[in-house]
Length: 217
Image 1 (cartoon, rainbow, N blue to C red):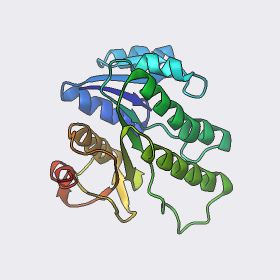
Image 2 (tube, rainbow, N blue to C red):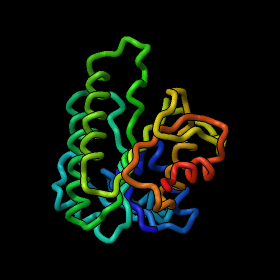
Image 3 (spheres, one colour):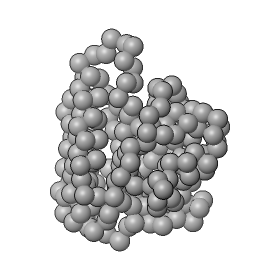
């Protein structure tokens, strides 16, 4: 499989790239700096240098050409409204349009559980972040692509457990980035899962089993 990761230098994107390479997949990504490109090359990853917020759809389509699936795991994490709009909002739409231009049908979006942090008094920029993420989910779900939206709960660093709870609706708890990346890698290798929204939390079901349980008959 040939996978393009937007957000390959992020926590989930980097872990996913390593897992896919270990499985023998070809991995491409988008980075902002040439030194990042050189570093990823040492790990067998071909990275394109560019800024998602300023690249045209045609620029992205040229980078996507000949890949099998695009994974969008970039995010502003509730930063300034300008960055959130450029990455989590406009960036997703731009990537989808570029996928169509490049003839890539599979598009996977790493999103967020809608009820994340609902127990807190959130600031204006974080509330805006959740609103933009929701609009991006809607745009992807209404597209003609073979899409998949994965909504993990609160992200933690540290080793994964290899077991999760995965389904159309899950409680908002917490999960390691390692387990999110492992779940993503398994989902990418399950072509029978598509045009679905799946939520992900820590759990007791082995990842491979959890993914198979979400294959529609």
